[in-house]
Length: 498
Image 1 (cartoon, rainbow, N blue to C red):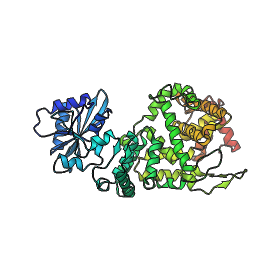
Image 2 (tube, helix red, strand yellow):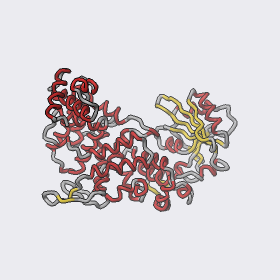
Image 3 (cartoon, one colour):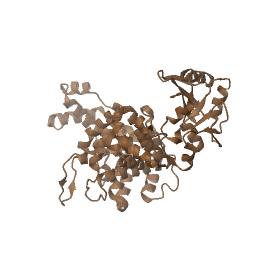
Image 4 (cartoon, rainbow, N blue to C red):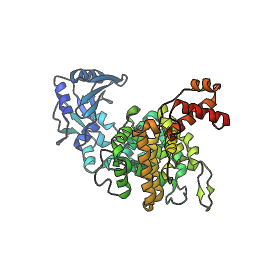
């Protein structure tokens, strides 16, 4: 044991007060103790008791006016959800995983997570049977015992994540175990692998985290399609192989997200490329933040899916045969189309939802659309972009900007970058501020109206005529019902509706 000052939040003291009359030993264990020692905010709290985890969770929920769930009847685990001034707090209460607290802690993953505090006693007295306090001081990730990672191979991925998250080195024997056991991630449920992968992607430095995961061989198991990108030559202006380009796109994308996030500082936008984003997209900042913060199942966010799309965006380059362009440079024509289906299949293998799979496949499919790099874009170009992409067009703008910065590196053409930001302003302005005129014009008539007026039968022709009418509304050539019918008659007579 060791006497320290831990940075506990009020929630811990509320918990302590709520169970003052409890006679069974109750311990705060694991990450909550680690985070209190590291002065990190507490988002979840794990509590361990000799028995009766579900019963204690129900009692805490009642006394603290929280929501209760029986999380795992077999393992006697209950969950409490509390609303606090700092947001939602998750409290998991579990029976010991072993005979007593000491054995429970020694059977955990890493020493820095094998710490406990007696909730009914001194909250500054840490129980540390595996040397976790010393490893915290020395910033070291060390498995609790020689078989800790072998016992549950998902811990290999968790060790990589926590080493990047905290900036800690992985101790040599632990690193050896991570390399040896990473292949056994195939034995772990796809849901557990997915959740740990997205925790890694959600880190402040996702590119660094993915680089480490790749270096120890785990990405070959989780996203095996990226292996073909290693060493894959790319034509100018690229200076990196396809794999390092992918990681660089993720790094640039994360910088762009930081510029439009609440974390932005004066230093964030000090570079010309990021400063131009800060200025050019500032009026959309709150709406972009809300877009990227949108929650998905199991704690994922739209931001996390966008980062994952960057990991997948060039999968097709490892699947198509490169062909020379007019200057003899080998190019991967059609790689966006080739990569869309594998991206969707990988998302399905990781048990992502249908909506998430569609988003990822769409971003991969369209990432070469190139609208930001045109000399000019018309209202019709803007309409067709949003028609084809829908809401995913917001994500695609950010992905394309990051892809451009990585492709050119430090020697990116500033005039093209300025034009790209101007086009991004135009596209986002249409989506957020001029939606009815340029993105989704109100229908002037329906398909059955068109069939009656022109004596047509139901079929693809009707949809094509309606689409041409919508485009006419965008260009200003169609403003009334009579205009719409006149255009439809002209197109039908001339056979130019397709």
